[in-house]
Image 1: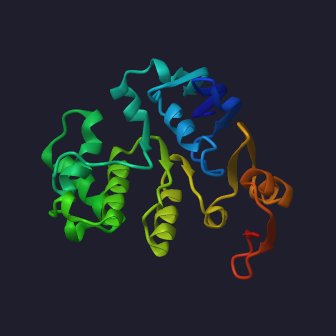
Image 2: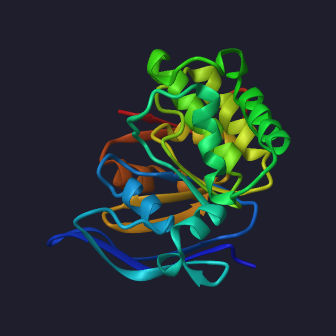
Amino acid sequence: MRVLEVKNLSAYYGKKCVFENISFNLEPGSFTALCGKNGSGKSTLLTLISGIVPGGLSFEGDVLFDGESVFKMKRKDAAKKISLLLQEENPVWNMSVSQFVETGLYPFGEMTKTQRDKIIDEALSKIGIADFSDKKIFNISGGEFQKCRLARSFVQGSPLMLFDEPSDKLDYSFQQSFLRSTRELDKTILFSIHDINTASIFTEDFLLLCGGKIIRGKRDEIFKEEILSKTFGARVRIFNHPVLNVPQVVFL
């Protein structure tokens, strides 16, 4: 069974091609890293997979979730099935941290207060922000706000979770903790990440965006000097992590 099918997907801003005719699928419960250099189209791809078409973008092809086109779903229905954490977000209302996290429950309609509180408290604890749940989001740091956004995604609990640079603005120890926690969820997860070495520690499944095309492979297939040099436009060397025994890359 395939939870997600990307079929011959192309995206254009005017005459500029972002990527062209890419196809892949994700199996239920998979944990996949999406990598590529800046401007390769990672954010555009994740946004389209969620069923959202950014302003000024035209596309061809389709994205199917359990056989249904995401572009034909009502947004509220799509949010129950697919969550998307965008790379950037500027809050408009100065609500409390717990109120902000609670917005992830919006697609699911009526719940008792006990049900809501339980889900929210679990997410706050999992992400480690329960101790400042009453703070206003205008009064917290960028890293703390990123953690609030991650907690909101956990609250939404969609079977397909998309993360665009989820570890951005986070200290290294929390990056590791977050990736470890999300990997243990019973979800299908696709996350973009700049740090391909960190990704290598937590997953074997990779998608690379390179020159408008997709490269799909397992970690040992992807970590080849020829492939990564072409993907990132730099000379590289591959070595094995002396403790974790996974491939790592040095950019020269």
